Image (cartoon, rainbow, N blue to C red; front, side, top):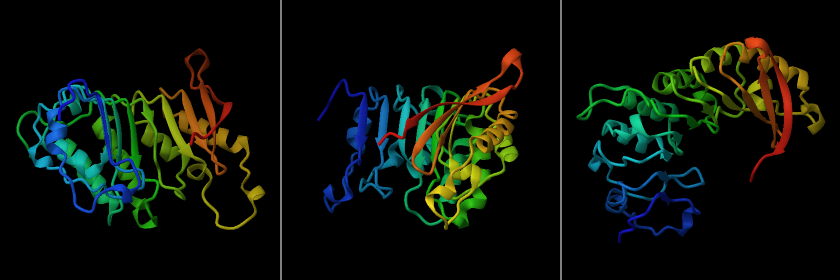
Length: 274
């Protein structure tokens, strides 16, 4: 089956029980359309392994010459990096990766970044840098406490791979993971063109297991103080979207009058989509 104008391919987005018991190999279909595919989405929406048997050992460096958006598992993207696919350096603008429900998810994500940076595997020019990448989402939101210590090293590895080009950080830092504003500013400051950051309120204020809903009200002044400190280390930062505990999202803008770092001011509030 061939679709000569196929630009967007999405596999594995339904409930897990709609799939047949036997695993399917879609490699032939995907590779046959690699010349036209611009968006490739290969993960389910349930945080579980998609039952697809993709033979990524057959990847070549010249596949997907138009690919600008990828959503999938870190193991898949690692295989693409080890194949030294040219598109990772030249056309890929948006990346959304998730480890799946695996033991030691930080190790899987580290393997992906190291494959990008590696000089040792594959043939042809190494990837080294995702130099066209503008937007990233790292699926760390469900990491447990045993993985929190690796979050900072993951951000540093990410900066090595796309620190010169990234403009939008969509997350996701783990829930219940609070990080000092100065350190967070230093980490995001490694992304020289970063304009937009998405954060959870928990990242700013921490997470408490007891108390009434009213006890979780977090003053705008506290958020403003935190973001102002963070913005002082992020020279290109323009907007921060903070998702509150009640799932509303607040847009905060960075004002730099006269070219100074300036202040952080609250903007409009929008409902969280979905």
